[in-house]
Image 1: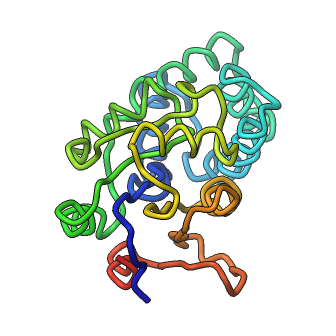
Image 2 (image 1 turned 180 degrees about the vertical axis):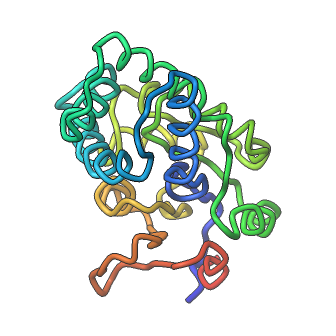
Length: 229
């Protein structure tokens, strides 16, 4: 079902275009080797990923700050693994993780192809909760920055998705209307319900294979967006 009268397409970045899990895994592998951290990567990630997910939820809800997220997600993971590590090393790993993350730039299958398809037809934009010092690097190093007319991050607005203020800021920056815009992202709470709450059309990139309610538009592969746009 094609969406009518759409002129502006807003994308989430992490977990939607940019394959965060794959790039994050490669980053941890690199910084563990740099610091001679003798830990099995798959064991670490099995514990870290749900902890990180929960901390990001707290961060979206304004219940923790950026520094707490960066440190505690690592500290909690090492504690759960009973891995003896100094606080100074956790801080070092936290900084190195942010530094090296955007040097790995695997995109989801179909990301570049769908951007090539959409670019001549729509004005494209990014709305992200990610840290400002990292997100532009991801776009640049993945060679997709030229597709997007505006990039709105939560730190420039002072709130995070699903707060309506970030969507309204992005619309204003893009000179777009609610009626002429659509939001595409993977996170139901932040991207989909957040967008719908301000009246935007929304399409879920359901790579998590979640069970979605009937009225949520979704795609399993980014190229399936051609059904809507």
